[in-house]
Structures are given as C-alpha cells and as structure tokens.
Amino acid sequence: MSTVEIEVKLTGVDDELSAAFDDLGGSRPARERLLTTYYDTPEGHLRRRGYALRIRSRGGARELTLKRDEGDGLTRGEWTSPLPPATRDDGAPRLDQLPAEVPLGDLGIADSDALNRTFLTDIERTKREVWMGDARVEASLDTGRIAAGGRETPVAELELELLRGPVRDMLAGARELLAKRRLAVGTRSKAATGTDLLLGTSPPAVRAARAKLDTADSIDRALAKVVRAASVHVTGNLAPVLEAGDPDGIHQLRVSLRRLRSALLFLKPHLGSRAAALNREARRALKRLGPARDLDVFLLDTLPAVIDANPGVSSLLRLRDAARERRDAAHESNRKLILGRRFNRFILDLLQVAHGGGLVARDSGEPLVETARDRLAARYRSLMKAGKGFDRLGEPERHRVRIAVKKLRYAGDYSRSLFPGQATGSCLRRLSSLQDDLGRLNDAAVARQISRELAAADPTAVDGASRVRDWCDERVRSAEPGLIESWRTFVAAEPFW
Image 1: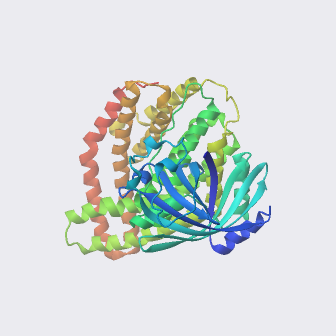
Image 2: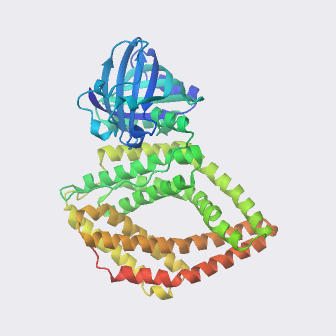
Image 3: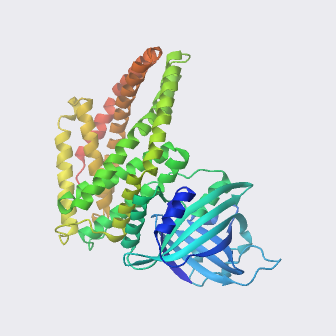
C-alpha cells in the first residue's frame, strides 16, 4: 500500500511529553511495543537517496515498509506490505515483497542480497486519536531506544500524524501545545538518527533547495513554493546546529532565514500581517545566530592565516583562546534559541504557510511574470543607486552594496524559472561572484571588530588584535582590483528580465 504520511514531531523531556499527550484528550489510549529493524547496503544506497527500509513487528504481526523523506519537516512517502510470521530462516527483506508501485529504479539496488541489517529501534508507543480543529490526528507518545554498532541513544517524542482534514489545523494544534509545554519541533526521523548512530556521524548541513515557479502560478502559490523551499532549508539545519554546533549548519541556517526574508520583502506590496510576523521572527533569529557565525569565520578562516603569518606570537594565541570562549557562549545561545518556544512557534507557522499558502493579502491575481519583472527591476535600481561611484566607496557604503546584491541575487534565484535562457544563468553567476568578493570584505571588517572587542577585555591580546587588523587591511588592499572588476563585469551584463 502506498500512502503520503504528514506528520509533525515534538521533542522534550519525558514529563513534558506525557503532559502534552494528556492535554490532547481524545480516545482511550492504546499501548503497543514496536520492534523495528532497518536495512541498507554497506554502501548506503538507500540513505543516500533519502529512503529507509524497515521490518516492524507489533503484537505478532509483521510489516515491511519503505519510506522516503521529502525533506520538508512534514511529509514522507510510504509503501507498506504485510509479511508472514517470522521464522528462523528469515534474513533481510526481498525487494519483491514491497508493493508493486514502489519506484524500485530509484533505490540503486539491483539485488536484495546486498541488504544488511543496520540498526534497530525498540519503542513503547502509547497512541490515541484526537481532533485538532477539523483535523483528525493520531497522537503517538514514543519512548525507547535506538541501537546500532554497539551504541544506543534514547527516544522520547510525541508524533502527530494527520489522518484526515486540513494540515493547518494539525499545525495549529501543535502550536497550542508549545504554548503550554516546553517542547520543540523535531526534525530528525528515527531512521536518520539510527544512521548517524551507526556511522558515528553528526547531522550534515543542508543547502538551499531551488523553488521552481511556473508562469501559471498565482502570486500566492508562487510564494508558498518559495516558503516551502525555505522551510526545507531551515528545518534541515536545525539538528546540525542543535546537536553538533556545526559551523556550516549555522551558516546555512542563516542563509535560509535570509532567503526567506528576501522573498517576503520581494513581494511585500502584496502581503499582509502574517508575512510581516514571519519576517520579524526570521530577523530576530538571524540577529541571535550572527555572533556565532562571525566567530566561526574568525576562528576557522581569519585567525589561522594570521597565526601562520606570525608564528610564535603569544598574543595571537591569547586572542584565539578568548575568541573560543566567546564562540562557545554564542553556540549555547543558538541552542537556547532553537529550543525556545518563540522560535518553535515560528517553525510551525512557516510549515503552515509552506503547505497552505495564505500570505498574499491583495492582488494575488496579478500576472506572476510581470510582478517578478517589476520587483526585479526595483531591486536592480536599488543596487545601482547603492553602487554609484563604486570605485570610490568606503567600507560602510560597500556593505550596503553587499546587502543590495544579496537581495537581487535571492530574488533572481527564485525567479529564474520564469525567465529561461543563458542570460539568466550568466547574470546570476556574476551576482554570485560579486557577492563572494564583497563577503570577503565584510569578513575583514568583522574580524577587525572582534579583535578590538577581545583586546579591550584582555590587554595581553592587544598586540594580537593589531596584527589581525594589519593582516585584514592588507587583504582588503590586495583584493581591491578583483572586487572592482567583479562590479564592472556585473554592471556590463544585460539584466535577464
């Protein structure tokens, strides 16, 4: 049987999860034990393609399930078929036991004999059906463990699976739970957690997914596509930040929020208060995430180069130690943000828009291509105004140019499918190159500021801060010809819209 599973997962400590489950009311709860074994090839053919294959046993019955994570924090494809009772000779499942409609060609596996047992889960599940507005939902309280490669990790989560009705009502119900209980939106499946446990890895950072707009889309539908792509990007990078403090995860989370804000500001004339609230929360999160990202760049990129150029200078090592302390505090601030009620309400609001639209308050019927062309032209004019006399601009003015470049580039990324042709790709590549060059200029400015702040708190780091400033100044001077060339190359290109 093939289905599409729409589910939101909430995580927290056992007491809060149990209390939230009781808050839901609904039918009399039923309890069951779920023993599940997952399978893949040694090379990980399934996980690399976003699939998970499992055999689940419950109450003597067994079923074989293939799942495909759609990556949007809510939706999974699912194919399930019953299996006969277990015998001693049972090994890995056979692919021909799956339903006929399974896309076997996408799995990258030609022979079932290539499958091995990878990890198992042992879950005590308490479930009941509840109403959330007009949505009928199965609520499952799961506790137990995941075991792989001699390692274990506990499981404690509340799953809300939509049985029928509007997804927005289920998400609104989850939002009400967050107002009462200290819970967070979970973005990692048991399969993904088990894989990391097996391999001894951490959740990887996720890069932006491209939204493909169609000329027939309404403005509301187009924006919903863009927000959905942004929600995939946002939710995909929560675990890397929360569980591993991954610098690339922090960077990608900030990029995802900037892209979201850019889309909301791009269509601002058509939007109402809901969009303004999303924009406000994204801006707040960006501000909280900024210090960690700046310190990561300082410690991973800038400072090592300065230390290499000045071997044996103790004040630089002192500067590094002070920066590490500050970075650790910034990463802890990121964790508190991601676990906080306000941010998790924002995540649910984002998912609600991604799956239901509704942000456009006026003129939704305007032609999408003409709207995009007008807005791109306005972004372009703003960039040209900010960059007037670029060769003579100082760092503060070029910082404003960098912001304008980002806004135009993100808008161009969203709109590129509306303007097919070589000119589109060429213009966006030039924009990307210009953004990278301006970004290095900004990194130098941020490194100087961090050095000044650290030296102000520790006199033994003053000399190190001075050396960082000198290195940054030289880097900016040497990059100047290339930066000016990037600007001129972009200005010479014909706008693709």
